Length: 443
Ligand SMILES: Nc1ncnc2c1ncn2[C@@H]1O[C@H](COP(=O)(O)OP(=O)(O)OP(=O)(O)O)[C@@H](O)[C@H]1O
Ligand SMILES: C[C@@](O)(CCOP(=O)(O)OP(=O)(O)O)CC(=O)O
Image (tube, rainbow, N blue to C red):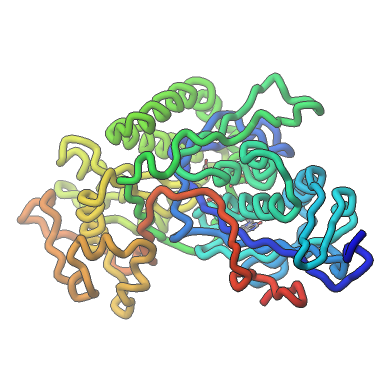
């Protein structure tokens, strides 16, 4: 073997970026915990990786003594079954790799004996309900597949990412993505749930008017992980079983149609209803799970006009939607308190950001540039160039003139403005690697 495994001084590495995704028809509940097979189909929108993404560098070298991984700069254990499943499945599909320039030739069978170094960085909070596991496992599987010259198509790769975290399979594609649960009768050693894969419904260009605004309420790690939460729901919630059998199959068809025809009214009412039902399932779980907890209740926009009781972002959106006579904004909440708001176009997004900033201004010492992240061009459209503009925003028209509107300063940590985005991509540029090209250790 030329230059290959007998020389120990080479390192081969690949760096990739993957998006996160937000489910508009939720995955909640597994029928197989090890293979991560869901009890219903789900549909998501991939978020633009320019604003929310994971970057992962994977490296191989004969000088590495063991598989090692660093997440956000800290070493983490790869011994967990999810990481092990992904590594095993990818290694078993590896092929010959040759880098003529570096004089490296790795034979297919060498991959079993070679160790990996992996460094990954999320540019958004980890384990806070912003689907870090989705972007993370998608990026891990995608970058390893590139490093090991795995020739499987993206759908097959999605079935491997699924074994890292269910929602990760949907991050292998851009745009609008369905995770098909697969045939329940087909679980056997032979099929291995291999028909439970993600498929792209439409790419990110199909409906590029959509504007997505995420209100990040808390970056703290949540109390009940999605994995634990959905296990408890499967065991105890009768509503979940009704949902997966009776409700979701119809909604999936309707949502596919809404996406295909860019029917925002239908898209919004399905997304809002499905988010509400998911949280109803959480309440139907014993003991109940509150993801939209005190923190999300603190993101109250204003007091109810008649009785003074406080309303949630949901109520506020419903109110605005009713005022305008058709859904203006879709909302959805994952397993955390952060609101994901989807506007049909920039015009509505402009009105939305004005309302959000009116009700949820930042604490006094916050700069606008660190309070609104991502695509800041919406701010320009809204005529907001500085914190001074935020302070003088007029109350929204749907508030009756004689009722003073309550503000909730500091309740939202920051907003991220984004849009539907593309799937994973490779970085050609070596300067983007997270591992040192000489030592193979984090930079
Ligand atoms: N970049 C990454 N690479 C590999 N694994 C990651 C990465 N980021 C997160 N993870 C894994 O995902 C776990 C967090 O998953 P968890 O489901 O608790 O939170 P989340 O994905 O941020 O939120 P949610 O899925 O509820 O939206 C981390 O503990 C880690 O094991
Ligand atoms: C509420 C959700 O975000 C749940 C995501 O759950 P995960 O994919 O994080 O769970 P595991 O498969 O156990 O890793 C809904 C969704 O993304 O569809």
